[in-house]
View (cartoon, helix red, strand yellow):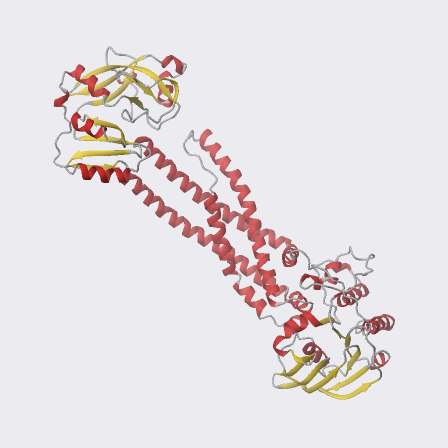
Length: 617
């Protein structure tokens, strides 16, 4: 069944095993005895597939397994160690059923551990630990059970109990016992191999043990077994894990809040620009700086994409509006920052849209400034005076407020019919509309049209005129400046995350070194290298994910606090920070990518882990 073929092992140019060949049966108890240092444990480790540095071959069912020792060990080998090798951060039950984390099936689960199964591993007695080690080996579905000095730390009474249990176990599978107690193993063993100086000196065969059918219970593996192991490993050093989670949470939160506030500030600036200069606005001028005419304006107005055209009379300065019409007084006039915007897409809070040239509507914020402590409804149908200055002569136009919009504006704003003020000014200053001098006009396009496309069409139709996007250069410059600021912030943010994650990598590297013996034990009971790699990686991801979940909650709460402070303390209703899902996704995705990079050292250490050396620590 199991053949050891010419096994030779060298350690620092010294032969530890010298050309050993064994032909072992399918069942029975086989003892390997000899003085300390003769190579018994080394041979056992080679038979178990955990020591792969040797010359020779191992055959299982007449097939060489030397190139597949990890698979062979996982499927066919179980261990009982002299030092028990229990994992202290697992429970009693989890130590016994350890193999179920990595493979299906198991022995009968009649564990009989009620008297100590709820105790911590550190509080167990020597006898209890020895029983756990035995139950763990019995639970693991293996064809070969390797026992390295299983009675070395026990008194004679308990040693006999263990040997009796192993004798029963040898009826179902092959049990190989390494011991230096020849008298003890002679009473139980079917065969005894005596070693000295790395060689087999003698072989005694007393009896053959017939095969008793081994009952294998088919079970599913534990649900998300590697995640569970990584979580238990994480909890085994709670203080260190909480410190990492706290530090990473602060890093994430500072980065996300900084970027969110930069985006919010840019949005506020852009909104402010749009409130001054709508994004649908196009300026036009003649290339030869000739004066624009109302006829040309009316021709533009006939375009289906244009909702409004407006001429600016640079010589007539608009000073503002007030309720006193007898004489202009600066203290009684409200300056209007915008008096030419279209009102087609503006919703009214009360009143109606202008029907005549002398009718206007005002924005909600402008109405509040005009009414002060009075009700806004008192402003409807009230007469106001718009003051203009032309060549040191100040005169007024009487308007009637017929409506109030439902929006607040950055600048006080009034809306009137297209070029209505020109029609009214001609009566006040006595000029002919054909004689007006204007070098600049504004076009407002329909919301369903693209401004850039309209400009292309207008340039083709009117090559003598220059058409430009109003505010586009300013908006572009601000966007570029904010983009540069964001790049700098992203660089510093990336460095902050990188330092935090590499700190996690360093801590996880120290954690792997600390737990290398535990990982070696897991390998002995069914774990493959990629299982261990996943456990280490999952543990790091759990730290990062925990930090991200906490950060998300704090981010939401902090946004609410900042918005309240900006509105109540700073009296700024325009700066409102919103929950930025895209930013969270970007930062968190980048952090996960960096986690993989930062985990390369600990993962490489696990991949190169020397199982035998780790078990001896």
